[in-house]
Length: 179
Image 1 (cartoon, one colour):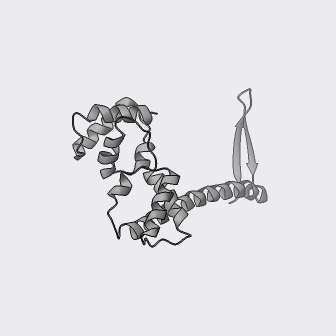
Image 2 (cartoon, rainbow, N blue to C red):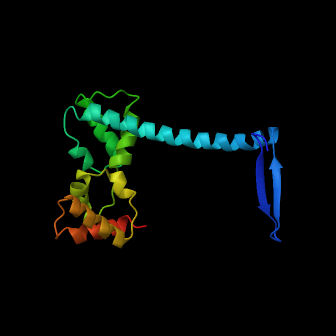
Image 3 (cartoon, rainbow, N blue to C red):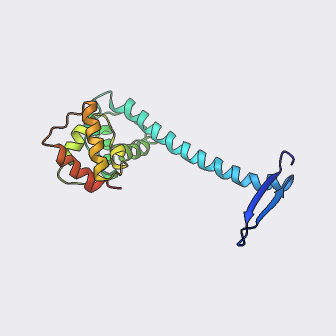
């Protein structure tokens, strides 16, 4: 087979192997849409990552000049809430261009967005966000046993989670972020 030849193997209902050879122009026509689809998927994923990185860059340059990031890490606002916070900061002199405001707000919602209310939320916001953004927690999706293993691992890494708060946080995570 030539450089552009492809062998397609199919089985019939009688389990008979059928081999078709596509070569030349047909192989190229077969491969091009697959390559194009893969490129579109890769570019789309890269654009989303670049947008998130841009939001983080804006956050780091515009926000950390006046205050540390803890108030952001522990707030867990929705889109409207983060927009209000950003508008308030702009009035106080934050340097964010009009074009960058939606990028920043979208990043804040994704990385530091809303968490379900309930007993344990405050502990998660104050303890877990010392190392993790809220997107990591929200996207964690684990069984209660896996959340328990995760919390034990975090304790071994030095998380300051008390014995008293452990079952509260475990119940909160298992209830709100189960598989």
